[in-house]
Image (tube, rainbow, N blue to C red; front, side, top):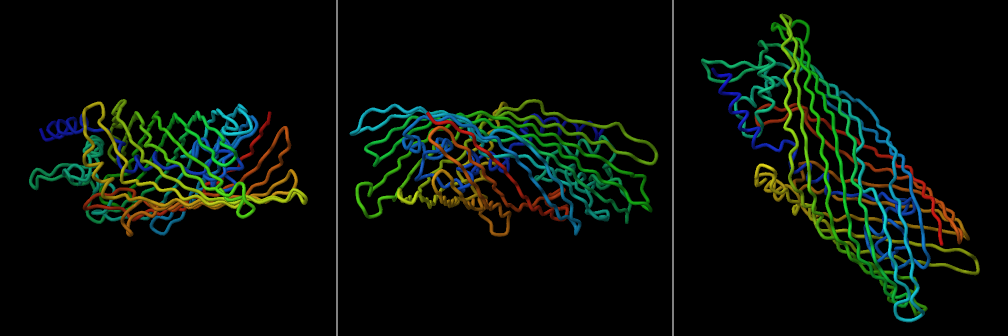
Amino acid sequence: MKRYVFLSMASVCLALLGYAQDDVDALRFSRSYPLGTARFSAMGGAFAALGGDLTTLAYNPAGIGVYRSGELSFTPNLNVTNVSSLYMGNKATDSRYTMGLSNVGGVGVINTGDGGLVNFNIGASYNKHSNFSERIMVRGNPIAKGDTYMDYFALAANNDPNRDDIEAELAYMTDLITFDTTLNRWFSNLKDNDQTVGRRSSEAWGSIGEFDVSLGGNIEHILYFGVTMGIQSMSYSQNLTDIDEGMSGNSSLFEGFTYKREYRISGMGYNFKAGVIARPFANADFLEGLRLGLAVHTPTFLAMSDRYDALISSSFLDGKPAPQNFSNGLYNYSLQAPFKLMGGVAYTFGDQSSKWRGIVSADFEHVDYSQMKLRSGDDGYDFFVENQNIENGYRNTANLRFGAELGYDNVAVRAGFATYGNPYKSSIGKNSTVNFYSLGAGYRSSMFFIDFAYSLAVQQDKSYMYNSREVQSAEISYDILQNNLMVTFGLRF
């Protein structure tokens, strides 16, 4: 009888649940990093005051006004992500390779005259903002009854308010937990002094990309302006497998279980951007090369769809229960990514007689991640708790980007650095700061150009194998290195 009551309660919870939507997903789909053309990436994305690059359509649209001739280009990208995990003193590493396009597009220039509005430009480009590709391996040590994965399942069945009944239902149907009618509580099907040992494998893939259409102009080579409409698309998939095995010498009949989860998330949305670039001393000998840039991005409004599937299979010495699975079908909801404000300063210099030229640039970007919002889903769920967690757990950040270029005649070398600040409020919580280091080189003529870039993104993260109010695994820490190789081929006309 208890079984049917439990399953009824679980079905009610499932009807109210969009399982994968939480503050972690909101952050994942609200952050963007300096991918795009090879030149843009090599200079750390510090182009808010520069322009003249297709990726600036997605950052400061005024950059389109800097163009004086038409351009077409595309940028293939090779990504290699290496993840090193540390769990209970055990280190494991894995990697994943992906290829794709980080930028493709073009700009057309309409010359209007020598005074006033010098030229009016229109352009369109696709830019990749984030790459979710990774593989993770985690290995643990033996854990005694009371702190095991199965004890965690029992806690979920005992209606821990921090957990959901899905896992508890699957654990019950596969005999991992049992109900004590005397104590009126759920317990794991382990005996005293039993131990289990676990491991995890995870694979993720997907990206955020944006198609931008921009209009902009050039006023007397002093003021450049532009506006962009962005159509953003994103996809994220993860296959996560946890395996827990009983140790030899255990008193119980438990041999092991496999817990598989599949997440499939996709979204489509839009935003608007506007910006200016000014050369305040364009007609003076002093500081002629100084450039100032400013851009504002509206929130990105995304329509999201999720699918979540879970399966637990278990084995015991006296037989193997049938695997039990759960699928929540397709769940639709909305996400509002935060407003962005960015400014930049750059200085260009050159000597026509010696053919030397150079650029130094720096950007500042303000993003308030506490303003992320999850909106009502198919079932009318209001995401009140999740949005409170976002407001209480996240903060505004300062993202900084720096770049430099030194050229002689048709050849240039470049370097950049970018740091994306920790969005979490608590100093004892996660530190999700991401640092980028980049190098590049290029060749440009009047008809074509080719640029190369390498960037390394360095990030640390942490998670738990399982985590609730009373039962928690040891912390898993990750060192994540994301390597990007890019080459841009372009034509000028």
